[in-house]
Structure formats: C-alpha cells, structure tokens
Amino acid sequence: MTMPAFAEELGGRLPSASEKAAANQLRRIIAAHASGDAKLRVLDDGNGPAEVTLTPALSSLLMELLRHVGRGDAVTLVPVSQMLTTQQAADILNVSRPFLISLLDKEAIKHTLVGRHRRIKAEDLFAYKRSRDEKRSEALSNLAELDGEYL
Image (cartoon, rainbow, N blue to C red; front, side, top):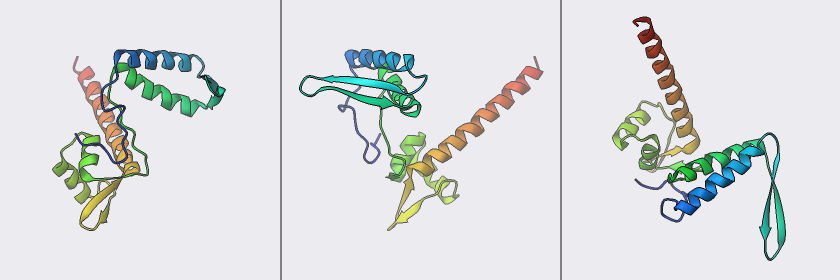
C-alpha cells in the first residue's frame, strides 16, 4: 500500500510491545480525566514540567490514536486539506484504483485536475466515506429488521 502524501510512518514499523503498553496506559489516564478540560503535565529533565490543556475534542482524538497504537495497528495521519492521488484515495477507501476512477467519473467524489492527473481533497474523500458508511449501516439495519420478521 502506498503512503498518503505527508503521511508520517511511526518509525516505519508496527508498534513494539512496550509502545503498545505505554499507549494503553496513557489512554487509560486520559480517559479517567476526559470529563472536561484535562491538564497533561510532562516532566522534562532540563526545563522542568510543561503543562498542556487537553480539550475534550483533543482528548478524544488522542485517545483514538492511542487505541490504534495500543492494539498494534499501523497509523497514518492525513491532514483534511491534503490533496491525494487516486492511488492514495483508493487505499484509504480500500478499493481498487479503477473503481475509484469510476466514482470520480460519476462525480460521486469531488476532485480536481492537475494537468491530466486527478487529485482528491482528503476532506471530500472522508465526506464520501462517511456517507457511504452511513448508507451501508442503514441497509444492514433494514436487512436485520426484515430478517427479524421471518423468525
């Protein structure tokens, strides 16, 4: 799989056992104080302690990242304003590049042309992904409801 533009590999490898444990420990600490603005204090040998206020939104985002690292998942960060190639977008959606091109041709996802190359704004790709996932969830709920009627 290709790396999205400006993606940062976390060391170019999956998290080690000690990194997973540290991520899980930090996630539990943040979760215990996630009711409002939590303060995170980091001790630095040279400069003394530094304090950062974690808003609920930032705490939630950080906990989501730590949850993935704690499970040993590879993590890639993509800024929402980033322009993606068709291959990068296809990798994010977990579809083939030709299928993604067909979505672009149907105008299901907004894109721009740079020369003869298509570029997709990450924000537009994630909006499409959210919409697709909502439709799938609704269809699955309807199927489960229909199945329940036959039991």
